Amino acid sequence: MRVIKFLDDSAVTYDLTNHTPTFTAQQVAAAEHEPGRYVAKPVIVKADGRYMMCVLAACYKIDLGALKKQLGAEHVELALENEIGEIFEDCELGAEPPFGNLYGLPVIMDVALRKDDHIIFQAGTHDKAIKMSMDDFVNLVEPKVLEFSYHMSS
Image (cartoon, rainbow, N blue to C red; front, side):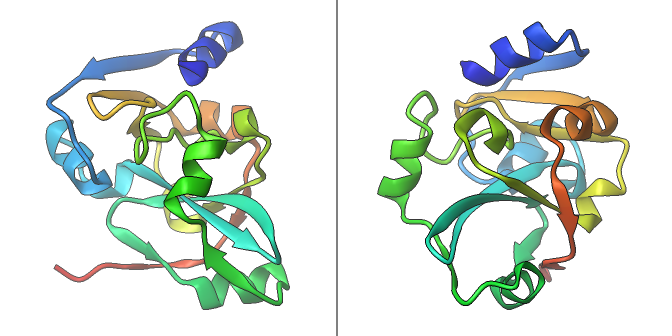
């Protein structure tokens, strides 16, 4: 998996865990016994035809209108599954890590996620997760931080 090699090559500290297969970020949170605010879910969008990775907490939803406004874009839409599969060929669909920079994508992180000290995310498969410090994540990815999400009600 590209992300694990990248983390190893970068000499950052991280924990890799195995769990039963999960298919949503909230399921990852439950499997890892962590609040959803620590689990990063990447959402791939197309802004004026250009792919971007938006990273937000599991318990949040993306606000495409807010994102469009902050990017100064004419049109923002979610990427299709087949498009995502083509970009992330080494990952199981829906288990992409939040490292868009490894796949040639600019990364935009929601401000709500940036407030925490660590981050957890799927490691390219549905049964592995990585936990690392938020500072290391930000240093490696260099995301643009914007406010483009809202908390999901239970």
